[in-house]
Length: 185
Image 1 (tube, rainbow, N blue to C red):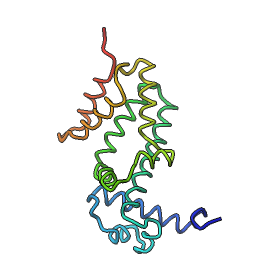
Image 2 (image 1 turned 45 degrees about the vertical axis):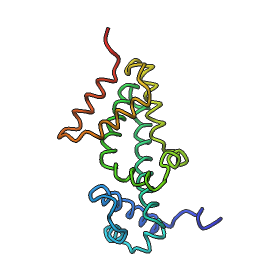
Image 3 (image 1 turned 180 degrees about the vertical axis):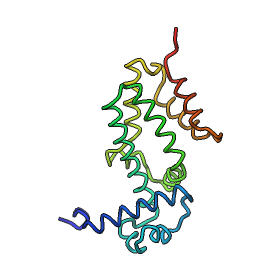
Image 4 (image 1 turned 120 degrees about the vertical axis):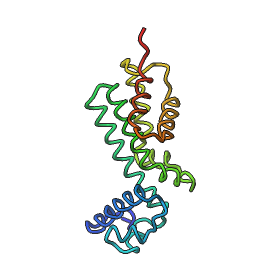
């Protein structure tokens, strides 16, 4: 068994989780320019501890984003299991837009550094796009979403929601969701 494949000791796992939590809060509140030493201070650990878990700032960004994507895929799976397809699709779409607003800079920074978040998410089993695509198809089959809407349409509409800079993002999310429903005869 190699060092990399061994599970972390409980204290090391706790430190890793503290670093991820502190980094997520710092990036969301202050952007990506927060220094690693500041994240370490907020996590209550030394910079060496941060470096052992995340050798580069990009690897810390990626870990924060992948952890959040895992939470979102778990949420999507729970929605699919507990709700009708239309409710599940619209709930996930709404959550994704709200989440993206808070993590837009992180995703952009990773894309700019050459990190392929879709490939990493697929490898980690937490590809949110795949969940959304599946829920879209199920909602269309159930008659809750217009059958002519494509996944590319949904992505473009999501990007449009992110571009909205008004005081009430939920209002624009509602407009988009109403527009995705099938037209009445």
